Amino acid sequence: MDTALLVETVIKIVVILLVFSALAGFGTYFERKVLAFMQRRLGPMNVGPYGLLQIAADGIKLFTKEDIIPAGVVPLIFKIAPVITAATAFMAAAAIPFLPSFTIFGYEVHPIVADINIGILYVMGMMAVGLYGPLLGGLASNNKYSLISTARAVAVFISYEVVSGLAILAPLMMVGSLSLLDINDYQAGGITHWIAFSQPVAFILFWIAAFAETGRTPFHLIANDHELIDGFGTEYSGMRWGLFFIGEYANMFFISFVMAIMFLGGYGDGSVAGAFALLGKVAFFFFFFLWTRAAWPDVRPDQLMWLTWKVLMPLAVINVVITGFVLMF
Amino acid sequence: MDHINTAHPYFGVFVLFVLTFGAFFMTTVIARLASRALAAKDTEKIKLSVYECGPEVTKQPNRISPQFYLFALLFLLFDVEIVFMFPWAVDFKLLGWFGFVEMLTFILLLAIGFIYAWKKGALEWHNIK
Image 1 (tube, one colour):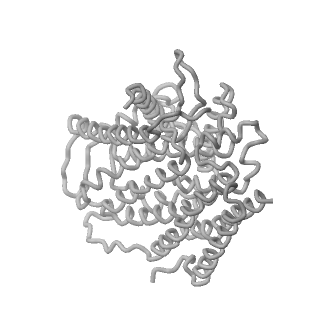
Image 2: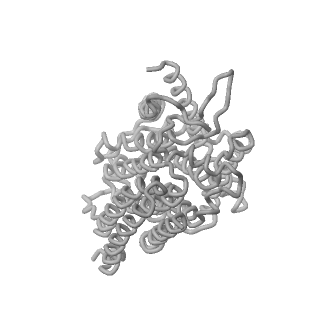
Image 3: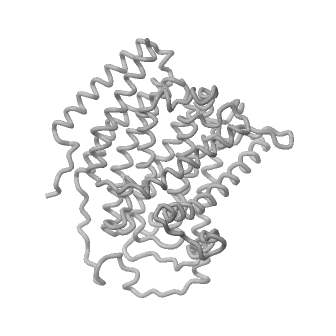
């Protein structure tokens, strides 16, 4: 094995782990600030300037909290479930190109961990494996709220897995490749080439499914606070609970990257402006997650199932068929 | 951006697997060590009991609505469909009319099954009683 390749891969992974762990922490700060401004409050202000050190305070608290394993849980599964959630969220990042390739000290860097040809399929598969975190954590918790939350999480996730899978089929038929690099290059010609304009239905469907897959607000019934305490995380405390949070926020960032690259042109032709455009699009999608939380109520589980199976899924299939006819003629 | 030319494209995935699981497992270990050293310990029995209303917890029946299993069955049906459709979608232009008609037949068969499940009421949310 090539040593240079190993060193390069490890450096890229360490950078991604550090950056997105920090971003996941800051995500909670952004969320509290955005929600506060939308409700005409100030949000966290006391710890540091504008409350910026709030995540440090939260981190210290999470690390030094008493390590509680409640009575009646299955200890091994209870302990590994949060690790699965956080780790699979980061593993999904392997096939995502975070920036266009750039040259540093005469060495060309590709900011993608593994340039595999099944790209988007791998990302969606890894996000699906992330479901095992809530599933195992809820089942091992010996708590009825956790159990109900787990059942809901599984039902919601697998339903929307169908929708998001069918939604990206239509763009894939146009592009003819699963690699996110090829999908990005397909849209390199500028704003008119974005897949969001040629496949608006697929874009909207995938966007809706992204909310369900990350468990964000219109579909936040996995951990619906007023019904299910904290859902599958009810019995968790300290850093184990924190890992669930890191996984959730990292997932939000990565699915924002996927949406920006698949539908909104990604980094375009790979210039510096394109790189900043990609980050701007990701920031917009992340902000939209928070905006929705401030503006929308939650739906009921039966409404959620009605929406996915009777509206979105048939729409996605029809979209695929129509795309096929348009491409054929 | 050009593709990376390497004989082992999945090598990065493997390294990522090892490093992420290692890093987050170590995070929980560090958290446990820190909390053992710093946090106040209090092993009162009631505190470790299940988070519930009332101090005395009885054994729970822990029933899940059978509706969830129905959705899981439907998911199996449609996810297998999508697994077949991914390779077809990637090679769509290559396969041409032949592949398209084949896939239309496949979708039609699944649509019949879907309509059957709909009419049977598998998509309604039933009362648990």
